[in-house]
Length: 73
Image 1 (cartoon, one colour):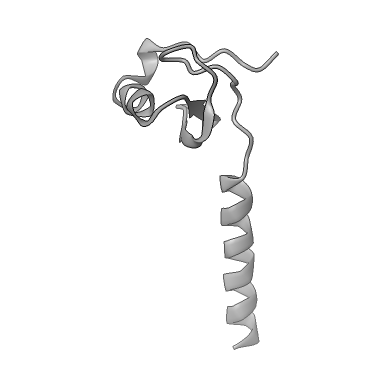
Image 2 (image 1 turned 90 degrees about the vertical axis):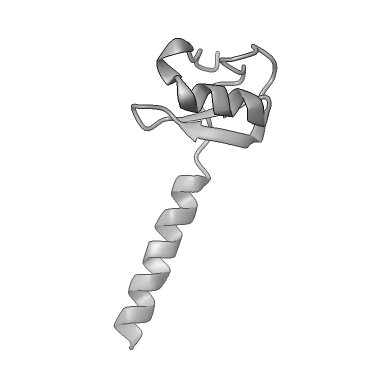
């Protein structure tokens, strides 16, 4: 039972640390406004990308190759 609880705790910790990753951008790739951290998605290469609005996130998710993500300076 202790082993199972340990594995569950480890899996939870890994999940939360991955979700807490900083986005690679500070400007929305769709509308070019400042991003809001509640709207985010993962790019094809697994990097976290943030967006200004939910609509921007939806557009990016449908056609990610159309938008260029500029890394933070």
